[in-house]
Image 1 (tube, rainbow, N blue to C red):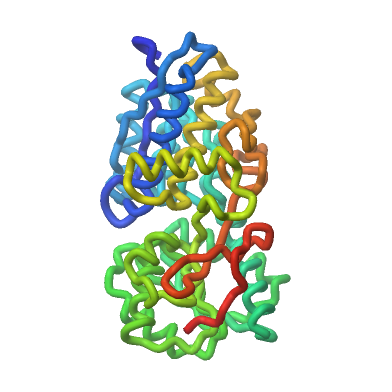
Image 2: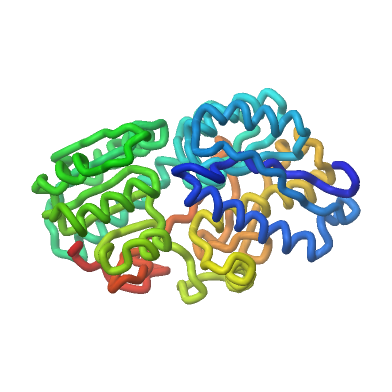
Length: 380
């Protein structure tokens, strides 16, 4: 802490292919900072104000180490952010050696918590939690659409994120019972998804499941709408955000299942979410997506740790984060679960997951049932 300020280092993707998540994450985090500072700052530190120092990884895994090194060199009190798991995996080696906590706002790979670093906390769902959410959504969709013994065609990003996600799916699927008829891997550098879309469209699968980044699902949805006619009755764009898909494709994306965004009308959304939503729209002239919420919650976790530790010393902050809990009145703005806290491995004990479907050019939450605004319709 210096000059009455506590500085958080945001190591994330503010440019490049993952910026569609990194930018809203950063904006959501800033709303949390604005709220905390307006309410008197960190009270146990004599009202110290929060400040964010940004380190753009530019969606390049090579920058994980360099940007984390810069943040540690600047003596930030804690680090948050990170959309690409490989970037985070490189960066946490640096922050862990320094004893600095990293609150991972976007990276989902199970490898992130499996390293056993007691300074790393996955605010975002991990791969197992992520995959379980999509498996449960697929089961719900198959049931509502009357599809017995559904088959699946998978396209996955050949990254730590994609491979971990796929591994988690395959483990869960041992009891879930989906029959995989096609599995297609592609490198993170892929920009033309024509061959992937063509192969997926030609399969007899009931379900197409993309285990990829936001742009991947968006590109596939566009190709299915304009060039290739998919036979599947269910298309799950596993990493794509509802707001991004709807804003770019509108009715072209009808039937696509995407990551759900919380809105003020979402059942179970706490009053604090409405406050956040209104402030975000006023400041950024857009609605917040799911990643904006994870950025917000990351800062709330950090602030709660500063309060509890009565310190901005990185090692003290990392120590108390293990026991910090956020509720609907203390910084958790997700509808479900109502309480966020970390398990012993640094993952959330229960992680937020919402799935939406694009219907008539608008996204409606379909999973979980407690937050559902609509039943699932067949793809196309």
